[in-house]
Amino acid sequence: MAKIKITQVKSGIDRSERQKQTLKALGLTKLHSTKEVEATPQILGMVNKVSHLVKVEKLA
Image (cartoon, rainbow, N blue to C red; front, side):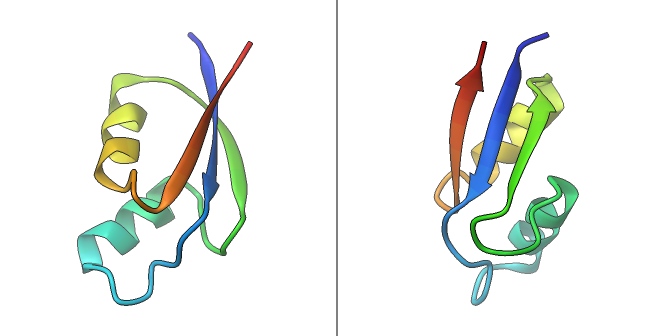
């Protein structure tokens, strides 16, 4: 599986509870926090739901 690096670039404040929980499930708790994860369909679906709050980079 390919890996992706997810970085939170916008705050979860004033967002729906579902979006806040999605950020938490991705392991993003603070602004500019970064996680490297496998690009599974489940993770990509979560990233798609909060795409306006995160930046995604593909890793080799």
